[in-house]
Length: 161
Image 1: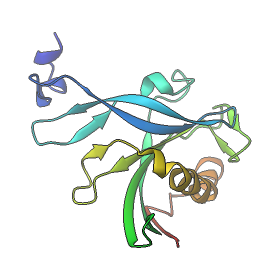
Image 2 (image 1 turned 90 degrees about the horizontal axis):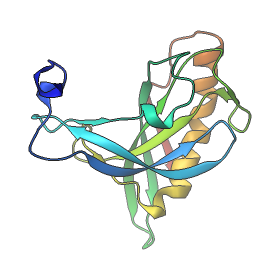
Image 3 (image 1 turned 180 degrees about the vertical axis):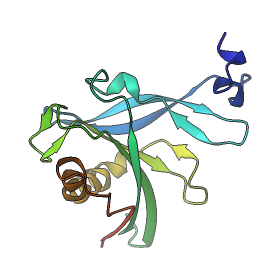
């Protein structure tokens, strides 16, 4: 029973998994919105269930992530800072994403500004920003996957002004 397993016992049983909107850049080069179920722990930490959206889990089941901070202007012209978490895998045998020049898919989720452990819905207005983040992240991800180098962009900061 999942409630008795040490991993699952940390999650709140009272509330069902939340469904959050995220952006998937798949191996066909198509970027689209997807719905991801997210578990919340007793400490209010968010754990997205990404596996159903990633291909070839038998090759590489480990999912890596990186925090990205973006400074941009909102619709009224005010400076705004948004935080995103990008999820990806690392293996040479993953299918190639020729659009990004990386192996496998990349998933982007929005993070609350005040607490980096809370995920929130990706807004429809975040489409352009999320796509820009993935294209900025792609060269770092390529080096990480192909050359087995440490991930140099542990926290990627960028401006869209």
